[in-house]
Image 1 (cartoon, rainbow, N blue to C red):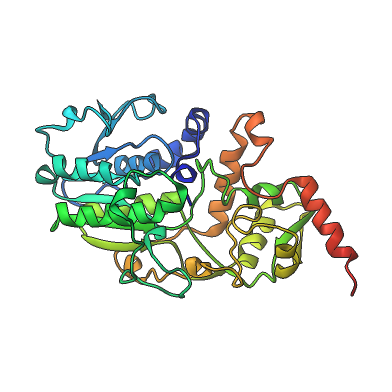
Image 2 (spheres, rainbow, N blue to C red):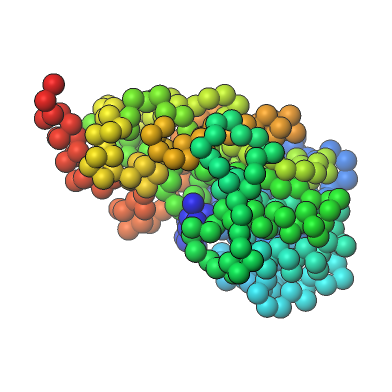
Length: 372
């Protein structure tokens, strides 16, 4: 997964989707206030995909949030928050001399950004929380890896290389820099596939949207391949809990708390859609022989035949003990569809991931026509 995958979204997506959670936030604000005194929280970024969910979760629990960004992406969001303008590749003077209980670094994969922010803010924050990635883990061929797994190496000369292939190495280097610069006050969360409302990458959205169209749906493999992901709102609520309790350390953040199969995911989408959608499970080798690409043509799927398939089996018990909780899959599917319906028609006309309708029909026809 590249940094651009994590950030794929547009101004209209966020503006339209804010309404999905406003009522729920208002209803829970009084009952979900933070324990103890409200925290002063600085969010670096906060206006794309993960950031807004974190800001909403913090505000709902009574914390005081300051946003630091360039003011170019969705600047109209969160008028109730203090907003400081600057650039992590330029002027960060707005942060000088200020103190916060926690800083939440929600998006970057560039080591220079972590180095500059941690150097400037480290002495003036009680906790530095960095959103990393499971791609920081070096060897994803081994199942059930926990936080002790070796991380992806990165040559010093490649620190500023934005290549997608070096994404995991850059995230791992960011983690090491944070540990060096904020030794006794850092928290790192490593999410895998992040899903739900506001995700503009379609890396999960393809399945609810495709199944909602109905008809015969090409489903990959036998249905037994595992998958893992985390609803962005569950990630956000976990991050806020870590701040409230000042929980330090490193956490894998993906779910659910049990093994999840592709069959369960797709059958949940069918159940939520309540239409004539029917799943046709197509053999993995058949798909691979025809050039169908796991993860892109068929999102959220990496079969056991592929290297890196253990990406879907990470051990998350440490995060669960620290307070990570998961909403029902039905809710994630339903809310993703509701958010999708708010997007402009032109955007909804073409998914960024998944099989094009004509390609899906072609593959299904070939599957049905194969010799017994």
